[in-house]
Length: 174
Image 1 (tube, one colour):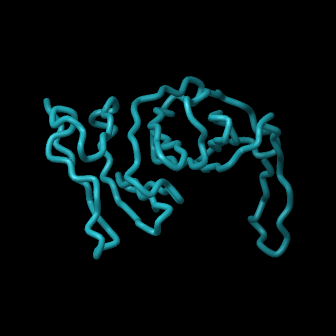
Image 2 (cartoon, helix red, strand yellow):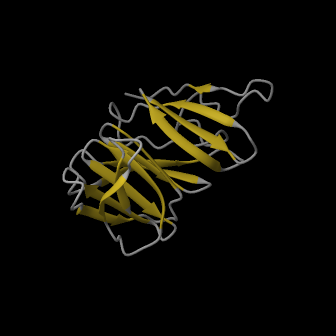
């Protein structure tokens, strides 16, 4: 990982570096933190408050390869082409797996999160928007259509093929 100072756009310079000991496939940056994931299933959180000397805060091994990572507030969304894990990163030194879900047919080709919505693009050029409610129910598991009704009532995970955006509504039992 190279950290580049671009405060003077005409003269970018290396500010620091970090060797994670594995080949990262993606990263996400947040204030004072960088999140790395890799095909090995490894997920690392770095403290970059001092860009010249980034420090490992924690690492965890996920059960699957991790090609994508996006972070919004206290949660990181880490996944491969078919599954997405939700990791509570509020305590950077002790991340906790909070849930996950299988992605709709077509797999994951891109991932972003902002303002309570997780956006993911499918490998068949389908794009989906999923409203997330992990802060209210961090142990929620998303199950695609066809799952038992008791898991996630009223869920429809498949978009209208004539509309590239679909909001998936989830009703949570109390």
